[in-house]
Image (cartoon, rainbow over all chains, first blue to last red; front, side, top):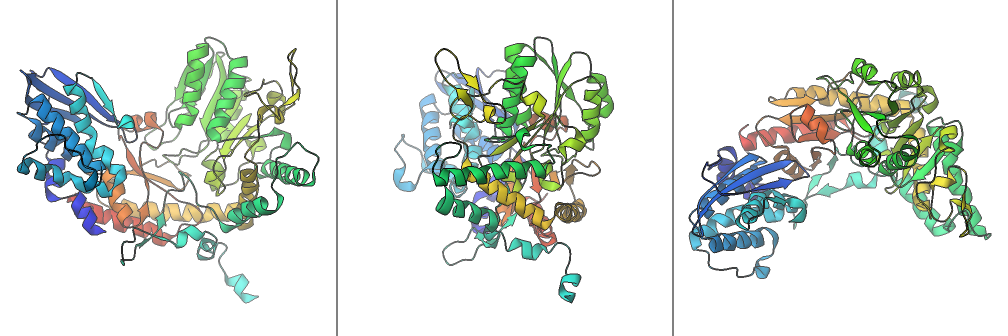
Amino acid sequence: MMDDLRELYQEVILDHGKHPRNFRHPDESNRQAKGENPMCGDRFMVYLTVKDGVVEDVAFQGRGCAISTASASMMTELVRGKTAAEAETLFQTFHDLCTKDDEDHADHGPVDEETMEKLMVMSGVRQFPVRVKCATLAWHAMNAALHGQDSASSDSF
Amino acid sequence: MPDAILSPAFDVLRVREDFPILARSVHARKGKPGKPLVYLDSGASAQKPRQVIQAMTRFLEEDYSNIHRGVHFLSQTATDQFEAVRAKVARFINAPSERCVVFTRSSTEAINLVAASYGRTFLTEGDEVILSIMEHHANIVPWQLLQAEKKIVIKVVPCDDDGVLDLDAYKDLLSDRTKLVAITHCSNVLGTVTPAKTIAALAHERGVPVLFDGSQAVVHGPVDVQEIDADFYVFTAHKLYGPTGLGVLYGKYDILKRMPPYQGGGDMIESVSFAGTTFKAPPARFEAGTPPITEVIGLGAAIDYVESLGRDAIAAHEHDLLQYATQQLSQVAGLRIIGTAPGKGPIISFALDGVHPHDVGTIVDQYGVAVRVGRHCAEPLAERFEVGPTVRASFGLYNTRAEADALVESLLAVKEFFGA
């Protein structure tokens, strides 16, 4: 039981939750989308700077729980420098990790081992179904921004 | 009978035996025992005593039938039992007559009924409805729907930092334009009990009717709609240790009978023809279609149960829990209680420095402690106290001081976990 908690709140997650990386609003960002969880009122704005099909910068602002904040922070580190297609691959892969059993994971494209390990850190949320929306909130917002949409609500995840 | 004399007025451990679910544990895993359930979410929905469960089962097994129609034996038996509960509900809130008691699907539907039927008929553009800052969404959104349709104006009574309703502001908001006041009798977030009698008296000076949302209030102490002089009073069965899917609308009869139907259908008509249909008198006028019959029987059993324990005894027990839990929680560093009005109900909302309520909820749940986290369907109130989401522990008649201790212990674990 407490093992599950430690799995969910690993040190790296607690660290990102307390000290989120890329927690800012870049002047040069050219796409943004709001991610909102109406149940708890958690709300993030995710900012992308996309040039020539490459996500040159990712940042976010807002307020949320340790899980959603840490996931947003780690998302910014993983997506930066990726092409739009690669970012989408990461989103889909991460979504499967959080919501599906291993055997149901689809192949959304190549993800290198190091990145996969980082995505896996958040997958402890799988044992806590009500927290999946926390973990995926900023990812949904990032994906929405990538597709030129301005918002994503956890009601529709 | 020395035992009877020596036994406390309210034997909570005995009472707990009436609630089968309270004996269970949660989060048991292969071979590992779980944690005893510490249920502190009765404000969202209360657990059910065996008396309610058995009454509903017995009714379904022995007496079930549709009501108000059919000449057969069971239909008459079921109708009699159903209508007996209406009379029981009337006694429970001291309504002058069972004709004033309308069964709905929920408190929410009861308020929607008043907004749609009374509101659409008697309110027009520019008319004002007064609500309070501490309303549940169920007592905000129906009026906003009416606002969109009729262009009425919604005024909001604020509260102070303790969560006490600002009566002076209320007096100032009352005017010739005020056509209805709709205010909670007990806040589901702050626990504040509002001065219903004063609220009604001030409105009545201007001939303005008042609706009270009693969803939390009827659970924690006696309610007398005539003493308050409420024009409408709504509550729900499931927070009162009864079943889901059933609410109650009390309305003064002379107001109810001036109101048009809310929904159309069977059981609410006198005669139907394509040339024109006539409607029954209230309460039948507002009960279109087959009602939740078995649930009404369950509510009757819940009222019997609560009255058998004694509503004053329940209130005293819950007050003791509230005081004890408040005292214990106050010793947790970094914990801030939202809602400190004198005479409040046994509901404690709080924020913990540096830890988001969702994280608190997940961790205390692993210790078996069930609390509500979020904005509790009262977003404007969360904004008012600038807290965003909070953790809410709400106590029921079956809770114990030991459970308050378990909450505090689990919160200390949260703090340790997050180094907060």
